[in-house]
Length: 278
Image (cartoon, rainbow, N blue to C red):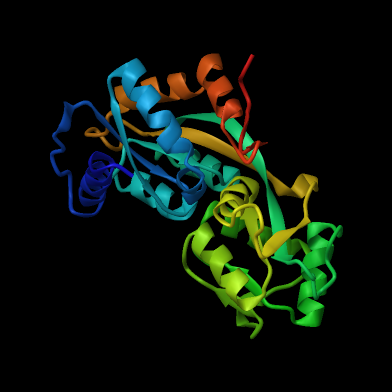
């Protein structure tokens, strides 16, 4: 990561958590975004941001947090635009007047990963069946526990499996951290976890194609993982850069940029599937 990119990141952090700090890296042409950790961990935004700056003359600065936290940052008028992946929470957010122009742009899927020897024997099961088996066998499960889109999906699967108060179980660990950190905890302790496929591919790459955790459960319609962009409401947040947010939404949903998203690969594997490419 370049020194300029590092500096831009910390300027964005200061702006979010300590008020609207005046950023000077590229004048006032800065769009502040709160996004999920997966778009950051996978390198997708590092891939797209220079293209956006070249096309629009606007520098994209972002902070990567769980979707729940990202929505709060938008609600508090700390950012201009969101890129998140929890459709139910997003729709409630828009319905309450906090965001506008919600646009679905891409998807991938969630997978359950675990040790290669799969001690709970969940390989090939449906996600609900797999979680029931993990609970019955008291196999270690590592959760993000951070109200992120991934955490919300995990909780919905436990609920569908008929398992409540899962956070009280001794074999259930909550990290309160992002996806890569949570995967690393699961790997260190020989546990299972739910992750988005894009982040798993980046993790696989970091392990030189031979990770200790492998995909065991996949392909179920329940594991669909949809990403959307949302502009922060200019009515609620008059200082938000709504025009910049609209330009970003039009740009990232354009056929040309959608094709770029589809072309973004690691280990020859596509991390995100665009919705609007032609």
